[in-house]
Amino acid sequence: MSLWYSAIPSPSTCSPVAGMLSPLKTFVGKLKLGVFSLVCTSQTPTPADTEQNIMYALVTNCHTYLPFLSLTTLFSVANAVEFKAALDHHFNVPLSIEYNNLLYVDVEVRLKQLDELCCQLSVASQIKTNFLACTRLHSPMSSDSQALVILGNLRLLLDCVQGKRRSLEADWWNFLDQCPRKSEEMLRVLMEETRCRTDQLDGLSNISFHDFSTLGVGRWLNDEIINYFVLKWCSEAQTTLGLSTFFACKFLFQENACITAKSGMLTAQEGAQVLRWCQKTERAFNFCSSTWDSVFIPIHKNCLHWYSAFIDFRFRRIKVYDSLRETCVTNRQKPVLMWLTEVLGHMRGDPVCLSNNPQTDWVFDPHAEGQVHFQPNAYDCGVHTLWQLQHVLEFRQVRIGNKCELARLTFTDNMAGKRMRLAQEILRDCEP
Image (cartoon, rainbow, N blue to C red; front, side):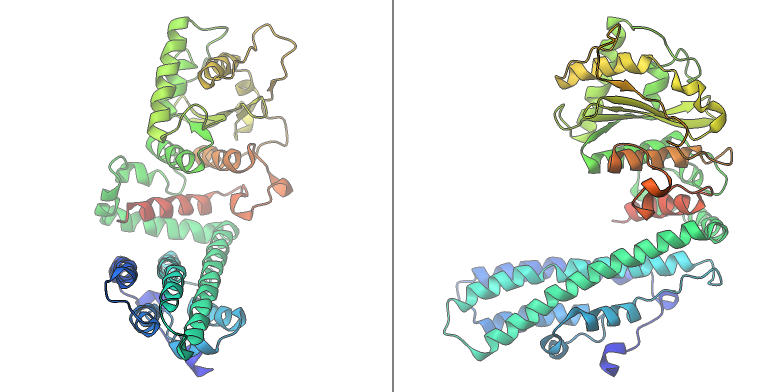
């Protein structure tokens, strides 16, 4: 068993993440090209050639992170238990408040290593397909069955690596929520580190360090941060048209401060402007009108408070989510949202009539008590708004307490852990 538990460098002593992983990314591309070349070459390869040139290269490169891995161990392993035990040992990060404030670096290194392993091991299926194609061109060989066992165990290892990656990330997110003071300490260190290395944000042209710093402890999120995640998450979900923070002040309120909502039916000219704005948003998301069936609208009130509105065409309901108890009641009354729903309904080819229509099956259901998590401070509203977006993308409504089945989406009184996650996500997106 000593083979399984060979030592590897601890996360804190590893070289920079990008430097460690870049050669492996290059290898994966070469490996895929090599597989293609072996199959397409005019000189028919033997299964032994495929085994030696492809599987050996894959195992050798995975050995960088998995010292226990060899063709011998892959031939002998018959179940996932040993793989899981080895992965738990090699990718163990002690999540403790006693750990130094660079704990987030160690976790990030491990997650990136697991990502790279997943990327490499995913090639095993392609290798197997091409290997089987080769065997049909030759007489059966005794090594064929051995190679298939190894390829099967590589697939099993991939499943275990993916599982370890998910569990480590889930444990990390839970730790951040359960230990908010530690999360605040690490977030301060991360902000200072990024301030000293602003080139880290060069990969995102629309996010400056000033914008990024609003994710810091006790800060109000600014428009750029809200818009970044609205665009990213809605583009990935492909179900919700996420409007920018500048939409509400331009079309739904009487002034840019988003204090007094417009009332009644708006003009045809205003309706045409809304259509042009939303069609431009569609193009930015690479959507068509049949792609999305809901709309998310972040609202920035007087540049001091964030809340959101959600229009759901599938379940025919309009909701307003406001995490600040003092303002949630007044922010329920937004009849202009019914007008907007009619305009967007026509845009989707799904006409909606809400004005003077008591028979409508639409429900204007601003949040009642128990439908939104109230913030205990004056600065976490922006993070709450982004978490409201996460909920409507996942559940089509906000769920709090036991109604939220996913621990990663649970609201907390102290959102420092969520801020840390958002900051890490942006830095990850900056990488090539």
